[in-house]
Image 1: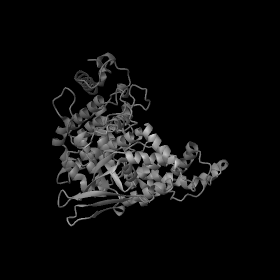
Image 2: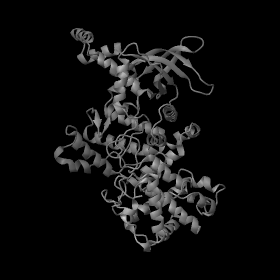
Image 3: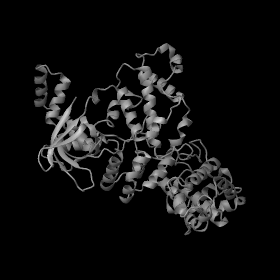
Image 4: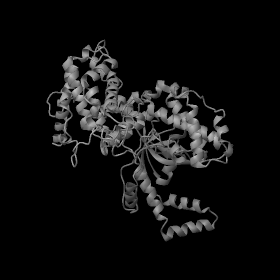
Length: 562
């Protein structure tokens, strides 16, 4: 059971704050006891619950070259935090309590089989979000995972009989076989992504139990041992993953020299396993890196530290920032740091609202918005575009038709909001309306669902395709024009939106005799960028005139060109 010990210095920045432990360790040591929980896509549509960005190999290579020169010194420490209080301790050696040793015990984690690591990880998530332990997973989802594992990994050496797959899939499962609807109560809360990820853990555990219970595996349907270990190791690396990987890369490059090759050969002659000899040589020559260890095991503090440090230094793309702050923590975990994130300039409420709309099954934007990760498609709607659309409905700001001075959403708020049955009993109708899960959200979803159903097409090649920004409809300009024009109609008619049913009626009245084929034509926009002032104003004018007088006929396709 590897135990690491280093001279260390303990300090407190404030009387209320957790202690910081300052020490240094070889890069090859650090990777054995520090996990890097990365945010990444899973096979299919899910995501991990990590908060670190995906590693950029070009940056690792550059840092490896920098560390390859022994004269180069990186002064800024790696930022780390406690992940397991039971196996990390600071022992003072003087009366002041500042100087001492930090001891890190990794136990036998690295030697555990994948199925045990997955079980530990599932238990950890259950401890973080207790509602998970009451959830059930559908039999069909587990059966699909078992069949997929057989196809992808060739699991044929466990307890199953290859010629009798049907009997395997029909057998009794260890988990409750309730329908997916059983977990609807927490599926669409702030814990959505944690629940989805937990479900993926459970189905993989079940697949391993059925197909390969007695053998260790390095991977099961995209879940690798090293990725799972990142959540279980004693310490989590909050910032500095590229520096760590670069230092290790530099040490590995040393093996190419004749001197180090001779050192390895000498060790092998003395009976050391060749792989172990390489590890020993790399370990002896790896760079020492400074570390600042925060002795706080709460996941919320880890996310807070990562988001604030990275947003202030090298700002993250809004999509990734929003994804991380809104889906890495459960509701109870987020609450202690929510206001601190807001005070630090992080638009937490926006992130929560938008993250919901990118994941909720009833949202017309599900799967069609970039999340700031590898796998995003260039024709998906940008996170900031959805943020702008949300602002019109949630904050009731920005509801302007391009070329108009009037903000129709703001006018509707002033004239109609307080009379809406959705909020009129509240002391502060706007505060209730604009909560991340306030009444605006159902109105938003229903409005754009009707826009999709009335004007859109599920054919990705159609001119009015829903889900690709190549479309005449599914883009910032068209979606904004429709929202602003709808609020103009609501304000003009003093419609208070007492319910989604009233919205349905208002939607039909708003469109009147407008043809569903409005966006389903090849507009003459060759060489034009949609999001330019001239195009925006032209499209807004054409839509406004047509919607008010459909009898004049659809605009000619050449008219869409300014």
